[in-house]
Image 1 (tube, rainbow, N blue to C red):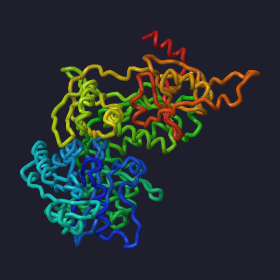
Image 2 (cartoon, rainbow, N blue to C red):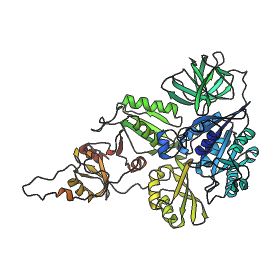
Image 3 (cartoon, rainbow, N blue to C red):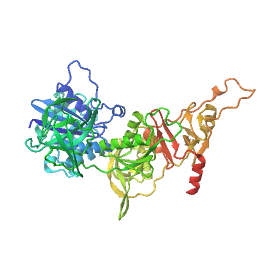
Image 4 (cartoon, rainbow, N blue to C red):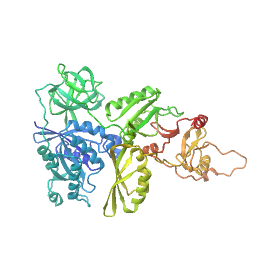
Length: 605
């Protein structure tokens, strides 16, 4: 078959999206005078802001008479659900590795999934034009990683390409690239044709197509994507939807079949086995379902993903400022949105609680959950979330909790303080290596110990440290981990914060708000410098008297309020706190806004 299906897998920022850019630019997809942005596939607003791939995307490139379907997968372990379902559509994988950094923890995570599925690997040592590039060392490290992940003999005999995705060049020989003899990315495209096997699919057999991804179009509604494992899919065809984990079947009708040509989905009459296809017409279709012929109910094995590691509660926003700028507020709207996300995001688990206004959401990590929160916020939702907690497993041997494999790269001067920080969070050193004036260390740390650790790590290393982590395994409970020792400054009453009142509050701790901010009773307006919470009136105004110095209020000088990111706000939360999320603001507050109710709860404890 003149088709190749390949996934590009890599650690965050190792250049896989830039490599796809090079494939598209040099395959004649764009006109000569067409203006094209960098990182074409990172089209989501959050992806552009964070500089990472969150959602997997499909493109195709015509190379000679061969159609190459390319899938760009997320590089962060928190989005492993995207990775696992996308790998079910391909026969090979381009493993992109930075020529300086080498394989990283999340490289290990995604590669392990690819090797488990028996995919044919091609190693691409990218960024060979960097000053400190050492491709030979990186290839040795990649080989050692393959061995550690129990790769087969065939997989260990992987082809190696040296590339500079930014320059759009690739070669099979490092010296050829170094001496400037490489002229294009074509050798790598030829390598995909030579080393990735054609799909093993029977066109004459019964129709089988696993739904691996979903998209939405304003004109045609929901669009289902997947690889046709057998048979032919036609526009206007009556189909049977089956699921290997469910006994129920239902009928549907394909409205229009689409294929990928470059970045575009193009309508076609039919698609044959082995190709990656898309179709519209079935609104309630879900990821994991199999498309069959009406008379041939043959479901494919369901997509299996690793279980979540962190959980938090999403609840209805009952704060006094909830409805100011939000479009969706009610429990029904929140419930529908969360369960809709769970149908698309297979690594996310959503469950109902005893309260109709609260829903428990479990994800693969802090980033996985924070991206969901930010996405819903931008869609116009208003809600509250509680402190992230680890997902625990009850066994005969006791309670098990998730552990993360953490890799850090820091200057030697900061290693001691970083190891002390990780030690406080129950981390255990696994390996330590020196590379020039920098140290590389690997740790095993409980997942709950990494909540909020990133900002502390950057502060401690003055921004010179690099940290990456990926899920390792479940292990026995590590014991209590010390959280922040300080309490919170809490607003005493509703009103508008004044500079006069904030001047007094500033003496008690660090402020999160400035003058003119709308506050309400129970809202957290800063961090107390001591243990325990302190309630303070920040809406208090200066008494008007006959004797006043002209312009005295203008002389008040306040420190700029501390600006916290979404991840830092989640890390700040205590057990009795929650984060109020609205389209226009993120506010820390107490779960119980009434101070008398908080006092009664404290006495009951």
